[in-house]
Image (cartoon, rainbow, N blue to C red; front, side):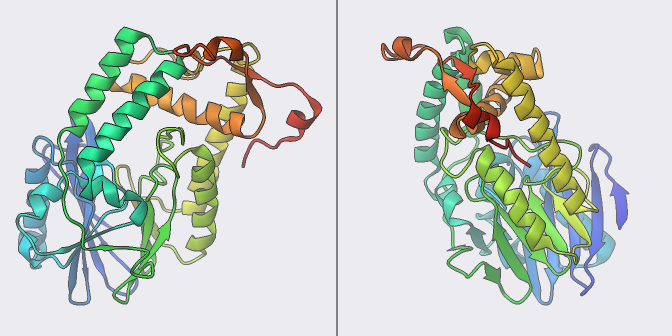
Length: 357
């Protein structure tokens, strides 16, 4: 791997080459203030393919174009937006799809995504409307106070207003989970309903499914079907089997490349096992999801409030779905508009349930 530091980014532009000679260029972009993402420009046979696009926020599009320019000037390759053959999206989150609005105005490249994230692109405004409604209901049930809840909703809507619907040319399942001769796809729901891993020769592009240094964010399935911690853990097992012994490197949407994807999967599963055990301990007495979040993650500010409540909610939901938790204030919630109080169930059947991993 050859790394070329950029002047403004804590992340790095880098070149990779697969065993069969495909050339990959990692382009860093500041998706949001203090939050960096990667897109990957791939040259394979006579094809030029872009994997993910950044957020389109701030200087993100300009940084993406600067990456194209580096590929042209340093490596002498025809890295022009109008020369792209395909744009492949690992999953339909704004920091991976936001650049599409800019790119599709300047290229005839065919855009592909998995069916379960299709409407994130083609019916984005509808998706946000439904998401905000479900999020508000979840925050009420989680025990987030009125003022803090509306602050969270405002921040959520501001970030999501950066994008608008764009057309899609094909979906991965309809294409047989393959593209041309060299690209293969694996559906890994959890972090996103339509998340995929892309295989090119001995390399994987994993989006946000597996990350170095952190465990990818989890949402409760209550917010979006085919997400949730149960789906995510099952998908980790799918990836572990699918990757086999022939993967040289796994390239992620944010952090450094993963040299041993099997070991990283094991580490992430251990993180969630520990978090689930801690959640059970916290719920030895009745508490709301917001209170569980405070116990798990301490005091957080800004957008991290939403992320921590969602993460706690994903773990509470996982335990509740498997009969390890009950709701202790049923009579109150029948009146409506009150938070749910969860409590650990201590009986012989619940004690037999294996948490995960």
